[in-house]
Image 1: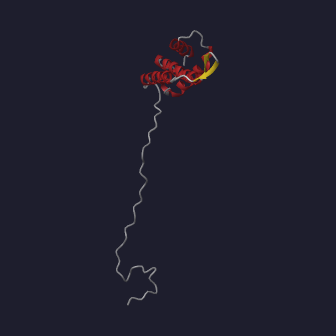
Image 2: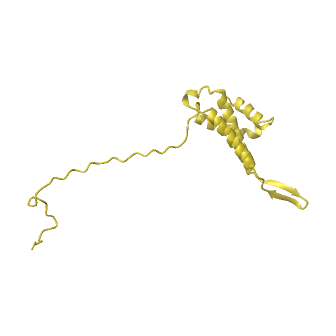
Length: 146
């Protein structure tokens, strides 16, 4: 994959100028995208796949950024503040899912499908019909009919 292309798309999405602070997220996104790529596209992935990798990096960066503790400055000092970042995380998730849908022909489908396989059934041997004189009398020894 062209990491420079992924980096430039990422910087466009997050409106930043320098990619150095985001190198970890970019590397993780490129590695995950390369893992998901179908073998026939591994040598020369389509341009859209690079944008998917950038969107995945945005999602990773957003999740890390939203987990940070923020400080709220008040007259009595600073207090830890928990801001609601669910909107940002949801938007990043939608971005990734949209690009994932566009790249469905190029990426492996990793959905889990459980299929039931019936167990192998053994046929019971059919019993032969015998007369009373020929039947097995196991357990009836010593019993007198009266």
